[in-house]
Amino acid sequence: MIADEKFSGVLTPVLTPFKKDLKPDVNRFIEQCQWLLSQNVSLAVFGTNSEANSLAVHEKISLLNSLVEAGINPNSMMPGTGCCSLTESIELTSHAINLGCKGALMLPPFYYKEVSDEGIFRSYSEIIQKIGSEKLKIYLYHIPQVSGVGLSINLIDRLVNEYPKVIAGIKDSSGDWENIKNILDRQWDDFRVFAGTESILLKTMQAGGAGCISATANINPKAIYNLYKNWVSDQAEELQIKLNEIRNLMESYPMIPALKSVVAYYSKHIEWNIVRPPLVSLKKDSQEELLQKLDNFGFNIPGLN
Image (cartoon, rainbow, N blue to C red; front, side):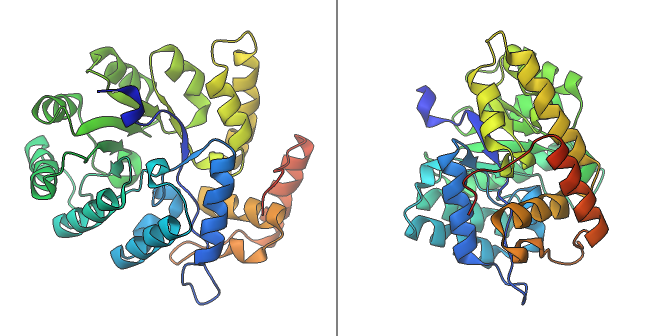
């Protein structure tokens, strides 16, 4: 398999903008995606920080269609398509692949807890077989602290060996470096490993990883891509330290409303603050505190619409 058939580099779970009536703001979503692409960041739309599980499948399909109709290359998109329902996962993944998306980022079904590896394997297997497309490339999504359903090394190994042309890689958002390292050490053929945060991007690249899929690439894309591009340089350690300052600050607040507050401020579009329940926006004093701390770092987002 040639390298450009799979993702590498920096991707972000694109924030989903909402209107006052809580419907997706399609035009603003398109503009955000266009800006991210101009910063060399690919689009993992419908990720955790996209409020994906607050969106219906028909809304995700409509948003994907809108992006493609706006001229965004589907080759730049890795939409999150894993749902609790097998039929919804198949429907959304099929649509994404038929649009030309280069891959799908797929959670395991996450409502039932303490399910076996066998059950999770059967779920992925059914999706793969029902779709039955040679174009299908699945990137597994491991975020057990949120989903409550993890992906064991043995399960990944079984999936890779059973479906080597389909299982393309993984986003590991566990926060467990040893787990990421164990996955990398398996050295499955052209299996792309993405850190779920830029805070370990340098370590991931040094260990043979493919890049990162980072929430904070919504607001700090240039700096994250700069480290990805220059991870072998003498400045890499310093670049990583500076990235971690911003990441650690953002993680000290509820991440999704914090990211939206930052985008709202720098884009001068206050509607970016809107989140769908059950999430709530940052209170005004928390917003002001966060923005002041960012200003103290000399932070800015040039070119954000």
